[in-house]
Length: 434
Image (cartoon, rainbow, N blue to C red; front, side):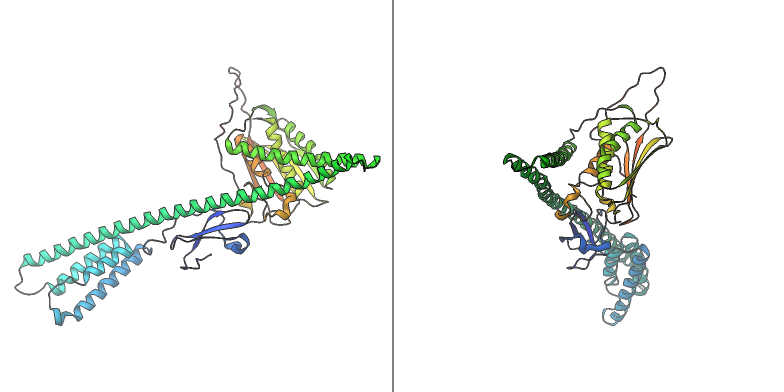
């Protein structure tokens, strides 16, 4: 459990980026950020909602009633000690603070208990004098009860006001932290994309300069053209990812849904990545349990989903590893599984796998892994098709498994025409993380 260094209260996570975590204390309203590594396994994985640490200390009803009883007992003891000096005057003088304490720290029920105990004890010990008019006794009792009710109501309003103020300050803390995190993410992304674009661009420019100066031998020309084409493809992929991310952010990414055979899309993605998989020294296995699975979707975008998953598997699987692609159907949906024997995913990284610009412990030194946009784009496209994408891993070094679930196409009625509606760009469905 992380604690606030200033007041000792429990710190909660407000926002998080790949490298830093923003923490806040709802007791003293401090906000600070630390490196992800310094939080360790105790850091909260999800954004936490407001917890009433700023208001009066919270306690159960039983503990509140105990506090009320102790406060009334202490008031009675002190009042008995002062009896030689005060006599029976001001019988409820010290019981009034006892009710206030019970109301402030315990709430309405302990305050009511304190009022009842104080009324009974005060009446028994200090209003039993012979010859005292009954009206005077009841006037004092009624006056004390009215004062106790007013104090309880005031205390309840005060507690509620403090809670609302603390909740408002907590929301402001969270909003400020998330804004700072977004700004930090933007700066990190600009640095990362600059670094990513610089490397292939330098290769292309270097080979072009060599060709222009005619310093290449004929047998080296093919190698130069291959290097230029390879790095130009890398640049094109990076630009496409950035453009897709921009379209996602602005809601302008369009789909062209139609009924299609899912196996055809999966095979197209596998064929597109086969050369890269083989050049990386990896074994590929494709298993299709059903070649007649039909879904409604955009074939190009669905192929992009599976291509991104395969590309991610290639990046994080060492030479000699194994990648498998499986297609199957249930009663309601079709499932495509992409599994690898690569580096795996740590438990503290799993909840953030599909976030943009996240690559585990992402640094510029790991820029060969790309911009960290592929999985977030795959998630978005799967959701646009009313599907989900999930990830599972047994931990670092044990590989990972990504599963895309898509609803099966509805069989058309023989008396109705087939209709395909474009998915609402604003629609979002929950992504399951296991």
